[in-house]
Image (cartoon, rainbow, N blue to C red; front, side):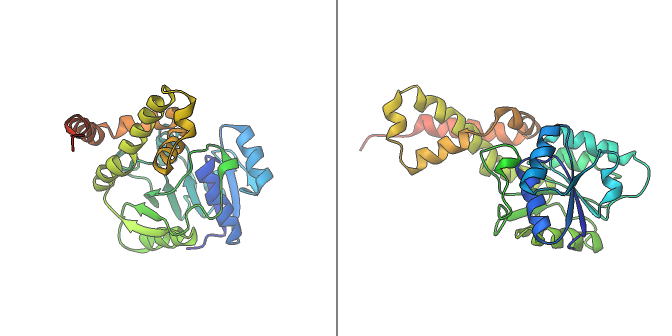
Length: 251
């Protein structure tokens, strides 16, 4: 599916990147956001063609992307379930956890939970890029195996990404160790390093620099994600703590 019109709720780094790619593919992109400055910036950099209200957006597009933070995404899903009028042929989210999204979206037509395994430590649409998803895995929770699944796979491929079908539970277990624990480690490491003084940061090697880069991600954005996936994250953190405590530095 290469939709002629794409709606973006949440015109930030991810939503803006989807908009830039969709426009490159020839689609008209309409944005909605609670932050009017984000919409102005999205228009200025060419991530969106036009703006709409949340009420107008679903009726004006063929594909709708919910690219806000987790809680606004869940709230918008609930609103869409009770909205009147037509439904886009495809609705996806891009939240970093899938179990609460699947639960919230029961009964919402044409919805597929997804998660692109790509991003940036910077926030805002100014950090968007049309090639952000190229070659990257884009997970989705399988639906009926029919036309809807074909549509979501085609949409993901139109972003340059590689579709990967996975259950919500398996996804959340996996990203706990591949994404969420590393994020917590990066914050803790950055705090430890900066407490050592300026020379420590000047003498960083590649691994330390990558951890510092990751530590630049907003804790506010991550709070809901980590809380929603706490059952998977906490046992892994405890295992990591035990492994660090037992690490032997002797020859």
